[in-house]
Image (cartoon, rainbow, N blue to C red; front, side, top):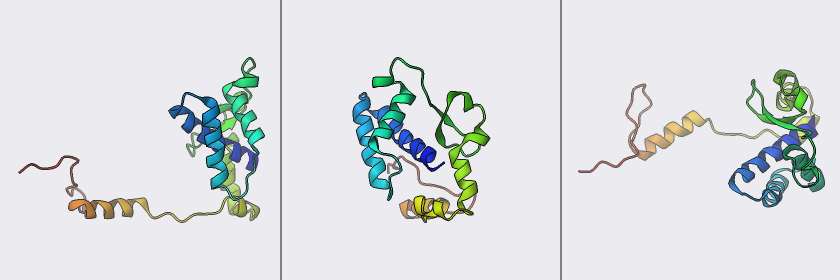
Length: 152
């Protein structure tokens, strides 16, 4: 499960870079660099990532063959993950992120691989930002600053 999560994460990073760059090799290198600097322990080597991308996007050595993986989005958690093409229809059972979420509290080994991070409550941060930006208030129907400046 950990390798499936890691492969899905690195492929999602690759797709984000690939959407901005016409060169798959540059996107692959940038994605692996990003992945390796963000993870304390790298579950996947560059060779493995190369093959995951090749097998999914049918690139380079795998161009003439059928894709081994299909990128899909889970209908429950909305995460993008890799799955065999035949398993795509069964999101609830095949999503590695849903499986990780279910096992996380019970399996201490996962805590070292996927440490929890504190994030500020986004609603409170947005309200605070709006107040600092110029007078939005927290009440329903309150006025929020517009994107246009007012001409006097």
